[in-house]
Length: 119
Length: 107
Image 1 (tube, each protein chain N blue to C red):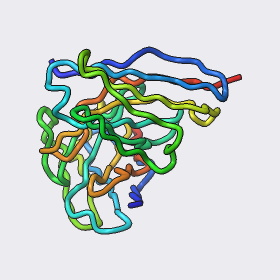
Image 2 (cartoon, rainbow over the protein chains, first blue to last red):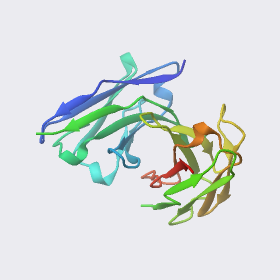
Image 3 (spheres, one colour):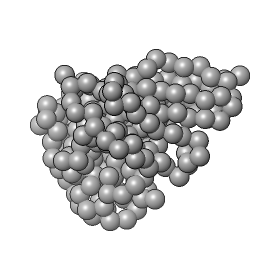
């Protein structure tokens, strides 16, 4: 079935970087933009950016520009979100999601990856 | 950036009640408005897309309406599993912003 499976929880110290993976299955990986959304504990949803798996094109939210990098490996249908210079307020669950061009919505979501930033 | 304002932020209701959640965009977004349901510890799940279209597999008690800047999500008869959190999202322009969420609580 169509699904996105993300990597496991991470614990990082301030200033470090984290790389979260998102492996797609059940659909053509290069056919749909892949977005990243995060959610701090008890808070709402925050859009971080998207990546086009077909050509690697990206667009990042202004807040994360310079700190986030979204890449992919089409040989294994996997997308990556790399966030650097981590701070305590980056502690959140990070989700990947596919964007359906037909629905104009995020129709498939990964299960989420908890990233904890603590000294 | 387009700001999305949901109201109320929380809502107490009973099983069987009809409830409405509103979402207002800070500028025109046509019908590029989606609604998601999020259960505790889970990823959001798409309920309504394009303001009023029901996603496949979603119960018909959920409905959406609106266009331009003002939108509503209505649940016609609340079921026990509906007492979770709901988010609106605009996909008219980047960044694709979300409302702050509405938490439905059992009265």
